[in-house]
Image (cartoon, rainbow, N blue to C red; front, side, top):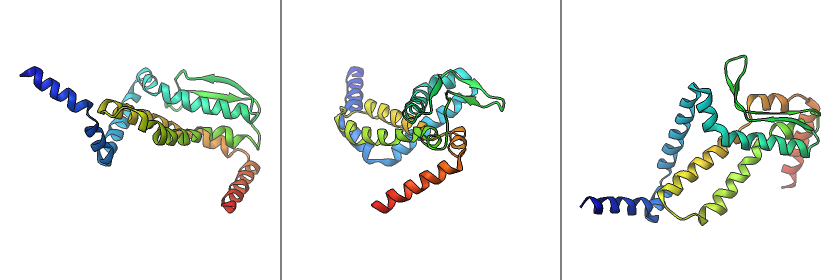
Length: 183
């Protein structure tokens, strides 16, 4: 009898019907994301637990700075994902330093993590349909997308660097306006 109950639970857990019911139920998705964010926030009590939870997202975030900064001639000079506390007591999970930040590359290098959003969209649109449908894969998918989207948001330091050069802000606003007018 117990074996049959365990077997039914296992089959229910692995069933595509459960997955489709969850995908169609946005309430479950919202609850799952809030739980993940609460767990993430609770981890901030310990530097090392926080680093362990945030390391995949930190790598993605800092890697985007590194790649775009290198492409835009900002000359990256250091890359770290080792967490530390800054003078205000908050945690800095990682950083990328640049030797050549100027008006034309400050905004792309600083706001590079925003490029994670199209990557998350691509995964949602084209990779998710290829994944076998079950609850475990769905939870892993939500965890991965939460990490991607959460780390796509530029930090306060990123926004400060992006706004360092008023001429760069004007340049990119003009470029954005031109792109909008083209469409």
